Length: 493
Image (cartoon, rainbow, N blue to C red; front, side, top):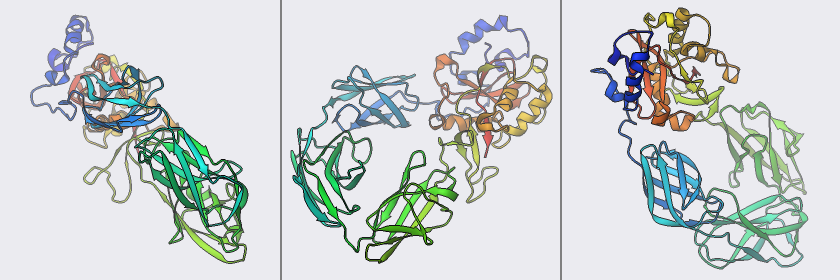
């Protein structure tokens, strides 16, 4: 593997005399090999060693999540809690969220990256899940729809973090959350909620707990010792739950009872012309344009707001306006056969105000090492390639025109990729490749460790040499076409 062309300065097809020299130099940063005046792109060039400044919460059971803050987290490879390795997600260079692993014991948290290892100054305390016991309601009673229900529960340990969910569970297992109660460190709690649920019998009060307020799974719960009946209110006509369970993940509506509106935001690629709503009502029936609605069965077109009319037992009605918004694309989102890698901004070539366009990257590399051109063209220029954003596809066409059909060289391999069934993949230009580097964490799957030689080909030629990007630091330089570097195909949307 030969080092940068500026050091050898010849398109020689024989590498033997230079390979040992290249293997030594390749361990150095590409910045040392850049020609005079060459640009080094480089948020990553000055990347810091990892450092943990704080974490929250300071204790929690197995399965709970912990937010680490600090610096130098972008290319984290491993995270430990004490001696146990933990699953983690890198949110940014300053934030990591880890999950307390099974078998973990109390101890410091540590983070490893290619630049070193950071250890927290304090220890995290691994606790057991609190045991919950619901004591009220304690017998078979009846309550009218909408009436208050007092619920009392105790916990086995005085946890001062996380939250409780207070609700009722129907005989079929449906759980209606009535309110959230912050854990305060007390051993006993008493709270009331309104029974806005369908009428019926066999209901139980339920209380659950999770270690992180606002997110995560409910890890401990208990139901009341006695069941109760909810009797019909002839005037009740509310929609108390509304969701699209058929989407992945399911989307839950936000109900504004005062305004009688329901709002949902669905992923960008969702077809909203025939969505099936799953809903719960306290009324007797629900209709849209006189068509009776069956929860989990009836489809509607949500390209514009839809009015759900709820009819009570006494015949009175109440309308809810359901509005569905399609979320804009976000970098890192699966879309168009790959992952959104960049979204055009004002000033970018092809930017259209109010309309999203940009780059989609393949979810994984197409090659860990392939030549840029066929041997016959190692010393022959490809006329007219550009480094600019939006030119990679045209560059790829020109490279293929010179080298012919086939996938034994970088541009041909990128074009041959058919991710998502699309045939318009190409080798990114220098500036497009830099966008992939800048968003490498959100896109995922890139080689970033120095030991893996994380050099990626662009489609931008400079004389008989080609611009590459070093994903360990972000530096850019140019190499001879007979070197073998990595390929990540992109396409435009």
